[in-house]
Amino acid sequence: MKKMLAPSILSADFMNLEPAIRMLKTAGADLIHCDVMDGHFVPNLTFGPPLIRQIRKLTGLPLDVHLMITNAEDTMDQYIDAGADWLSIHAEAVRDPRKALERIRNRKVRAGIVIKPKTSVAAIRELLPFCDYVLVMSVEPGFGGQSYLASADDKIRELAAWKREERLDYLIEVDGGINPENIAAVSERGAEVFVAGSAVFHAQDPAGTIKIMKDLMNAKG
Image (spheres, rainbow, N blue to C red):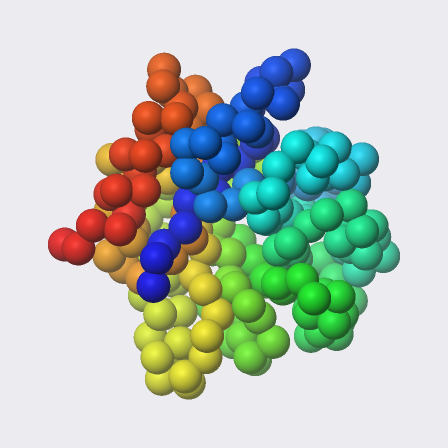
């Protein structure tokens, strides 16, 4: 399958967000990753449905919304109404993860479960049949610009093995510290969707960096 790059707007210049969003489309980004944080489940505070709604007006690219919020099931419909195409939740932050995933799917949106660095893959194994994708956090959630944690490697391999063995079709997404230096290796381990924030938006040539990363992640080793 063709692998996908999802630049994270958390690292973009919010005073110039419109040109940044338009650049992502012309540069060949596959998704736009939107990190929603509530200052409670994670220490940072970002944005909510109003910004998602504005981004939706600017682009036809799918919006990959990652909810790092407590009691996500109480507000997740607002993100879907605002324009989310993919919506991921943390199992620790909802009362009934399976029911929440099914609700997302019933809204015709891709449903994802997220694994923090300290969460084992085994902890979410029973949820895999109800997921369209699994988001492996390769940094501690809350802030951009962190370095990739090697502990994510085994989780990616484990998810890839279970996917084959159980004949499931979830995608394996990785978020945290992804850059041109490591994206090819992470791809080789079985990842299929790559979130990149600082590597794209802090680069001298963001559009050129997107093209380089897409070439690297799709290269056959």
